[in-house]
Amino acid sequence: MLFLVMMCVKRWRWTAGIAATCVVGSVLLALPCQGLAQDAAATNQSSPSPAGQDTALEGIDAAQENGEDLDPNLVPLEPELTASPPDLSTSDNSVETPLVETAASAGSSGPQETLYNIPVVIDQSVQSHIRFFNTSIRDRFEQWMVRLNRYRPLVENIFAEFNLPSDLVHLSLVESGFNPYAYSRAKATGPWQFMKGTGKLYGLRIDHYVDERRDPIKSTVAAARYLRDLYDIFGTWPLAMAAYNAGEGKVLRALHKAQAESFSEISRTKLIRLETKQYVPRIMAATIIARNPDQYGFAQNPVPPHEFEEVVVTRPLHFRAISNITGISYNDLRLLNPELRRDATPPDEAAYHLKVPVGMSSKVLELLERVPTHKFPPVAMMADREISRPKVSASHLYRVRIGDTLQKISRKFGVPIKTIKARNNISGPGIRAGALLNLAR
Image (cartoon, rainbow, N blue to C red; front, side):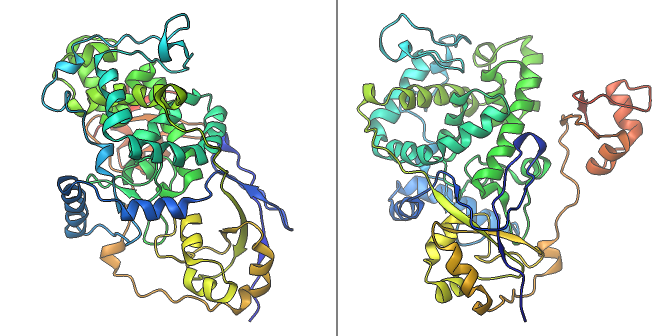
């Protein structure tokens, strides 16, 4: 039996979601990622502290006990990503110094001479994180920067499409070290550490076969949309970043209870967790070092961008079968396609865009018919059943998009139209795109 196989390049339309225009022929798609195999190997071979390792493994064990559908490719979130500097780990004193929400300006000495496009200050808390990154975990932080630099052009291009400041890419540095396979105790996954509900809310496919939270392109688009929505809600990047960590509901409640308007004000209260109080200074510290690597003695060796080609396949194929026929490394296929949870293209995709190393697409096209179709084992219906509606928290907020109607939003979130109208003082039948709705039940 012959199968239709063609080579295709996707022209991403970030602002309209993820649309693709396919062009028959051989076209190169260059994206930042080469050498990730070495990074993953280093991650798996690293020796985190026993306490940190136990903590991460406990998270995976707990997820398995709860029926979470995990795959063996995931790696625990590196403990250094959540560790606190020694002088910040035991008290809230670090946040007593006010965090001024203004961008660092030129004219002062040291890294503050750099002009940042997110608010950056160097207070006691930020300085503690700088010391932590620069001394305590220097080697690990350098690995994160190298890995991020491979993806940086991709992330910055997507963020530019959403009119987001380029320095915001360093949020991913402190979330995961931009590791697509990172998995946290809280079940967040991927370079941007999306929870399942938030990922689905922002258009990511998450099921038994595919987890797009791990796709560097699609997850970055989702993160850009989420960060843009958070900024539209709060109006400042420190508050938006805090909400990315804690959730918009918790930050809104803290602002309301404290009668405050800024992150620096609520950071001096007990209304948000210490983790969130440290999160914003942590991003500022990572930004300062990443933007001034010479001043902190970090090497600036050029990092080659990741390059790959895409081949469209119309049936499920396993990486090992492709590797056996084409000679492409199994690890290369796995690392080029981190979103594929079963190391195989999904059975429900009529045309899946499989990424292959540069220069290998022609060979794959010639040999693909010889690759046997992969037969997935049966999936237990209850174990893999996906909830059709995103969960709505007690203070869930939703930004109305073009094409939304009250009926569509009601069906999507399972909240009656009457409740939506009552919660948001809506009297008429229509809603305005851009409006912020409270979808509490």
